[in-house]
Image (cartoon, rainbow, N blue to C red; front, top):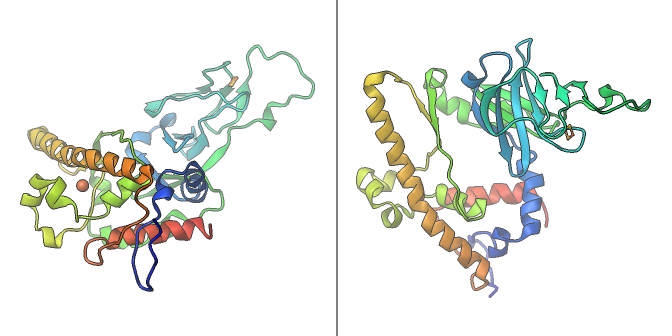
Length: 293
Ligand code: FES
Ligand SMILES: [Fe+2]
């Protein structure tokens, strides 16, 4: 099924990249363990003990405001035998108590108590602090990075600070977070997410509402609003539902494309210079992150 590549031909990633387990592990290490990930709004971390917990492709992590007011990030992982402290989501806690055998850590990640552990001369609580991760804050938005040598958040954001400079980002409130489960590789959905070529076929409602020729992808699942007054509540609910409906419209086609990518008949396909520049950019960045294979 190999296509012979003519110079200048622009093809998408090989199909097997979308389902091979070893590729996914490579991506976990080369992309998700090294890039900044957005995890939520700083407004959810206003007071000491406030936290946001989440999972990044298998790594459970959280950010918490410590008693001195600093934001700290850790793996949601106990140093005893890999238990955990916090369910995913937002909340408040004064101490971090492991759900497995009850070890207690403070909000700076120091191990404070090991109830029932018994005496052991070799054991020193200082040797078993929580495993820290990096935390970055940009205009009221909180990011984490598992790589201690990661480049600064500001440089990873590229043009975003400049593009969003005219907008009062800090004044927007996150009113709702919507999570979707979809049965496809993360790249199958990202490919879909960064092009508008499929809009006439998959989103007829959206197609009628926009100037398709001028379409550029922008789409988020945290819904931020500037006007949070009660009289606009219905309009906000409509905005959220309309957006969620558009997201759902992509699921069916992505899941079928995923099964086709896995079945073995498809190798790779041509990318439109007019419609799929975003897909090409995404693939180029991924190849850059993975390095030679
Ligand atoms: S794993 Fe956390 S106390 Fe045992
Ligand atoms: Fe779509």
